[in-house]
Length: 112
Length: 115
Image (cartoon, rainbow over all chains, first blue to last red):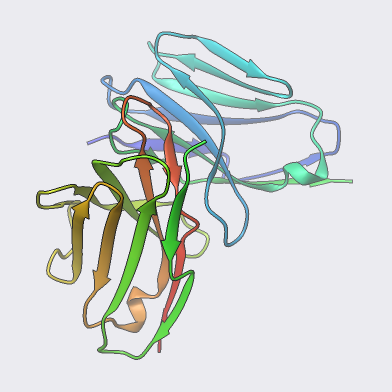
């Protein structure tokens, strides 16, 4: 089955700096890669996703890149703000309606 | 966007009793729903895939006789934790994809505490 690894497990940045979180996956059939932000006690919130037919996607301060050959994808957050502090999870799926396999999570802390 | 609800949001039960958690898709039909469990400071781990009108598919290591799943309609799936024990205390979250879409919609989760 699919295995998703995520690094780093914790990340501390100064407000205004950029943050990068990286994930690798094992199943070459995976073609959908969402990123979630989860605050304590809350449901995961989709912040951006990418499909395998696209190499990069951007939405304001957030971007995701995908390298299918190397089987890795990354989340980039620019101009970080204190409200970006949360746990971020990457995930992979083999397509619409199929189960998600989650990475281990990254605790991001944005310090003033 | 599509909305998924869960009930209850929190439940405390005594060891040995059973607890039922409901997951509803409010504005779309969900032929498939997923049940995840999340322990503190850990990731979401898929427990089972709930399929409307058929048996659930359980992930390796998940006891199907302990975690009973019923998906009797296109908008409702239930997870029953039978003979709950303290080690079953966790955050249970369901999700459902809207047909034809890649995005999955998560319920708000249910915090189960077994005393």
